[in-house]
Length: 139
Image (cartoon, rainbow, N blue to C red; front, side):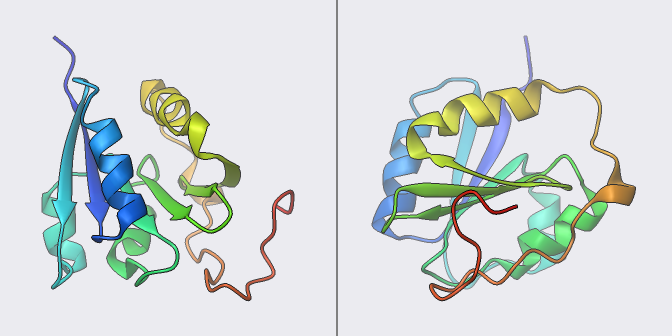
């Protein structure tokens, strides 16, 4: 039997809670909700997450972005409830897509047995505030 993929939900916003409820319906995922106080990097690393989901309108999970340096196959997913977009960091790239494609993207990324090349990884993601210059279509 294949190992269940561990998804950590970072925060308690409505959008993160809704995604968590949807993802829990898939037996291939183990979904855990993290609540304040937020874990430090070492504590988060011991949870061995494959995916971390957070609301871009809430506190940014700094520990998750630090883990990208050591674990380039980790996916950090920021969800924007205002414009129905999902931002995905996976060691080397940022993608935006509709929330409808979230499960397919997680499955696609986690099926890849070869880790991404960490030498090409972007470990300092762009600022995620509402006034950020990161818009749909920009890379």
